[in-house]
Image (cartoon, rainbow, N blue to C red; front, side, top):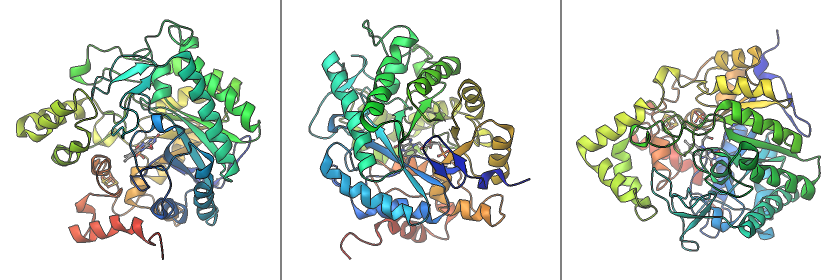
Length: 441
Ligand SMILES: Cc1cc2nc3c(=O)[nH]c(=O)nc-3n(C[C@H](O)[C@H](O)[C@H](O)COP(=O)(O)O)c2cc1C
Ligand code: SF4
């Protein structure tokens, strides 16, 4: 029987050479104004070289108001197109496809920048984890944002990229509309599921009207939201179920979506995404300082992380709300299976994958058509080439320690798990490779 991992995957408008996608992940590699840097190209090339069939970019804001953190390249104006063309060209040299994740953070803005002190959302309610404040979008705001997504898709196409993904997962703006726990609107964009889905369906229709029907468009969705998973958020509503999300996906496919990328959790991060074997509060006690002024609860959280006992308690709560370390690999597969049964388009599943036999079995069973991998590829950029050479797992796998996650707000993106390296110096040297070649060589 041919190896399922290395069978091409054909979508309506795109064929990818194998079944492993680099999931959305990057760091603060670019300029404050949203123009791109060589470091982002270096970052993406690492994974293209390492054998993945396609790279799905990290969040790419369609508007400055919608960015999550500065120093991520944006797609908010035509002058950004040449940079993204260069990214696509560099990745294509390795027979790897490039899909841009179109995003708007809504109220979930870790470091909001100087331009827009208040985020826009479906609601006026601040987010409960960090206390990011926001105001509910007006009909004019909605119209402007829908149009910005369509313009983002048009620019991605003009840049020669292979498709776009809507960031409809992990608590960002589209989730803030979809979620029964977050969206408290009284107009046609709130209330029943069909109304909560209207915003994203409008976006899909606007994209199709702008770029036509022959450009790849996929949607990342948090199938189950687990909005009140944390003990101190038990008073919140649980959020959407996988049954509701399956219905949303059916509407999206009817409106013109070519694939669904299944994730989980109503916020980012969430105890289940990226699911961790640890929450490194000692690192948070340093890097979370970047966020102190961003939300009403961020100073409280920072002080909790800095206290020995309170830090341990926070860490315990976080881990208790997640899954045991030996269940992280493929934790979203049951949701992917449910979505796959509901739609006619290919389904990609994210969450912990790093073992060839587990990935192969998930595809063979029909739980999903492909997997996306973030952290394990940060740990082993060439994991897919290792699978091709017959290895089932890397010698030094990702430990799911989530140090890459908690470093990313302040430090360069990379693997910060010292136990995977001969020394701290070797680890830092590997992290810094993202800056080579430098911008002006
Ligand atoms: C540092 C970091 C940054 C991430 N950035 C994004 C992002 O920009 N957009 C997104 O949809 N998911 C993002 N994710 C989530 C990953 O794409 C992935 O879905 C999640 O980590 C689970 O997969 P994994 O276990 O293979 O890491 C990020 C994860 C990490 C650790
Ligand atoms: S720091 Fe390294 S080992 Fe830890 S989760 Fe990130 S990639 Fe995996």
